Image 1 (cartoon, chains in turn brown, yellow, green, purple):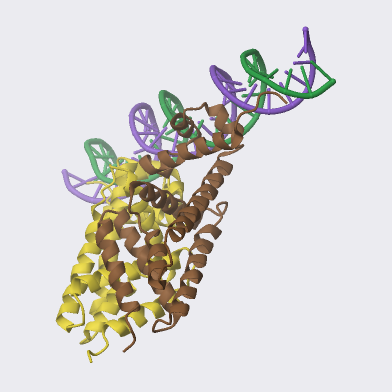
Image 2 (image 1 turned 120 degrees about the vertical axis):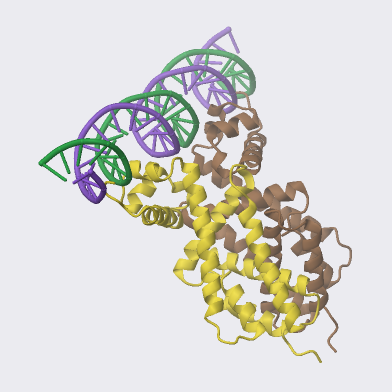
Length: 195
Length: 195
DNA sequence: ATCATATTGATACAGCCGTACCACAACGGG
DNA sequence: CCCGTTGTGGTACGGCTGTATCAATATGAT
């Protein structure tokens, strides 16, 4: 076995380069060359670690998905003996582009989703399964908390609202704070004690 | 004066070609050549009517915006002596990709919005001003109807919900019917008679 | 009829894209 | 020690892009 470099670290370095390019200049500015330059490696190296651009794009999507899942789990783990409302609020906060890092994530993720609308080679599953999982999880919490209304419908409504608010923040139509306010107001209603 | 063609009709023909390409294959598949082929004209003609691709892209955005505004006015005009709730429902129905035509519109519009996130040459105004106008209009109706809660907040919530639902329909996570159901359920609550 | 000009067509060009290919540097097992 | 495997760099190639250039056609006022 000759010299061994940290394969995974290199891949992560390149993927992060792509995410930075996509976040700054848009997904259309992502080329093998621009990614290589941003990651500080040669074009050949990008080709070496990802045989084709399609594989690179896919790897980025997987990494984004995993990172999202981790942030989302970490946020839950940070709560000590949380109420159902706190759990739901934590889950939905992840759907809003609050800090710059989260903003880049949502921007790139949305770019991918739009691409997947028309590109058959790009799997549409992540954009359906991810929210589906989240919706099921919220449904469970709502059902357990005994809120008024059908838990499934309320979960769907919550998720759609959060996503819509997230988009308006992304395009600069609303501040993260005001989006969070609206979301909390909705939760106030939902978790209001039944009369 | 030699032969006279309908300038505006030609421009519309080309723009419609672009919208079809963008709707079918994605905005990344939009090239001067693909648009020309789809519109059934020569590449040179596209160059003739739109000096550069940037101008073409801008013209498309303007046309989409105008069409949206027209559909939206037509929907309102179709209501005879409508209740506030009917007005709001009509306004929001336009935000959902129900028929195929509306679906293409939303798909292309979203592609443009994502592009505008990073491309400074692309005006971000339409993606802010359009929803803003709609939100103000809904605010006015809600205030006039005397619904519970702050009209501005409720209008913002409604719009975000509708947009979120629209997105979930677009990515195939939900049917237009179920999205409309959730929206109506929300309106039921909002317009419920105060006790 | 005819001709100036509005309109359309074919093609050339420079640049960027993804990918393929060739050379070689580093390094650990024999 | 050294050789084959693994990692890295440079560069060439065909194809597609937006744009520019050179012609040709059609038409209606004269």
